[in-house]
Image (tube, rainbow, N blue to C red; front, side):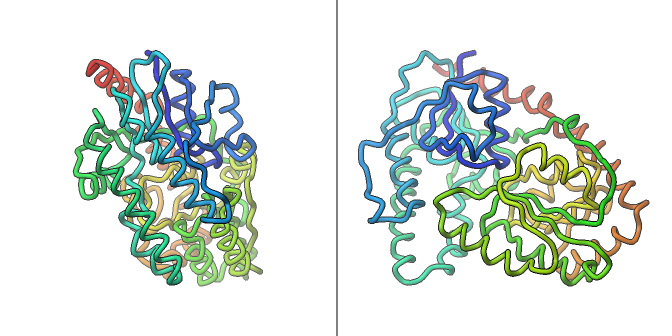
Length: 377
């Protein structure tokens, strides 16, 4: 099957990029993107035919922030894109790549989530801005919603990663979707023991709420017993907001642990394999690959009781779903004092992932979805 894959930004190492990479490995598609930074995303992307979509309008850097400029220009580029390759189906991923449906039929949109800044995180984002920032943000979101509402009804089929994202798609986009949860390659992950640190890997962005993990670890008092907190995450270049957030959490973690930025994949696996347990504290996460990778590494997950973790973590069996930093601190203390419990939860977690979240299971459903859309031409 000839697949054209659309992903607007390939400049990070996150869960979305991992899903896109696995799909690319299976179908060897032409990949259209607005921004590709090879050194900041997975090296495997270099083997594919990656083409840059260019906007017809160019916004000077001095007029708007890089983030707003990227959003507007990438939206215009995908909205205007006419795919000239022969293809059976177009597989769009991150927003606004779905806008390519304006001029191209037979689209399967893997909607990892509706644009969170435009919808469920809108009020939260607005509270973080000053008067001018609020005005610019409001205008950019209105621009986005206009085109999203024009294009989304035309898309032939939408699939997503979780019940959480499915509910957002129904609420904000008024579309039905099928759930095909991502998988991982379980054999890539090992358990090499339990060194005295808790681990939180994720992109360095405010919605990942590293400050909650730091607060919980501080409350646990485990730093006085030789434990530390290790944070590892990718940082997207050119994002002043993210750089400011990194500076903030560096100050918060001082004396409690360390932060590693843009660590290589093999180093990430090593950090998983040696930690005592993994923390996960984002705002209502869409799905979340981190808990799967932690469980595959036979490590319990201590996560917030919201969003995607509710669909992947088995409470008190493969980890803990916590309603406060106090609960997280208590659970960390419990794990640190009972290695037998850590081992038991770890074994249960790996078994849970191997039975429910593999790429074989993912592609069994994804292949069918692609074929269904291809027949709509």
